[in-house]
Length: 409
Image (tube, rainbow, N blue to C red; front, side):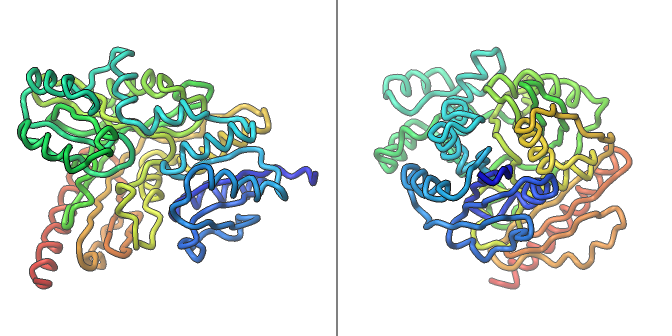
């Protein structure tokens, strides 16, 4: 053996640039395994020892065989899934190769929304009333107890939920889904304000977190013409204090030992309670996964940029530091941070993304236009400045999208 430390990273699209760079800067060699279609993407190739690709559509056993073949000439110390689609696959590879890290059972808890609701409810957290789509008597009983409308939500992935108005619509939809229907859950719609908490977890404890309020529900950004906003929540507010406290207990409840998490919760406008919606492992993207297709910018980095603008902490780089510290048994040191504020505007459109040249505010630290998406991030000294500025820019982008849509018609 050559004695070098090596990571195998899996990615189904272009993402995780700063993770790869941090590994290289820390002396860890990285093999990146991605899909053939992303071979020529703008990866930080200077940070990679090897870029390997595979065809799309391989099942886990085929990917495991591919990795085992690559491992004939490389000894991997850690296996990292850079996006959620490969989370369970990476766990299976770890168990097969006996590499330390999250196993398949825990990985499933961070992917399956039914499992997440069952676990969260068992630990005493508020969750929307839900029902697995499996036993029809259970569904009838649920619909008799919980008033319509409901959401029919995929258990895996980031696809948008379907709004169901009455039992007849549900039965028709389930007929259309066929054998795929058990991969959904039916749940109560909780109206309210949506929040996201990003965290760094080490030794089963949340060492760092930041709370942002979202202007749209998860999944809505995939709709053409949607403008989505986020801004850092006032750290002295009830929302910031209570959501951070919930997250400190919540994130490790799903079995996370070390890594990055992103949780979504909603504050009910009916009773003011905080309801858990979902939690993911890794640096969550700015858009749902399916909207990356055909784009040229790693939008997971956009969310990381928002957190860094507000706190000075890069989640991608800290994730790499966590894994390297564990490998070297050096202990993880919580990064220095500051309590600033930031906000973001994101938009998607059916045609070309809107022009951002008019946005000359010196507070804007990132301005990106790529494919059918556009976004900007600004830094602010106080939460009200972040919220109001983002609201103004969202209105401006919305107007430009409306004009562009009219011109295309």
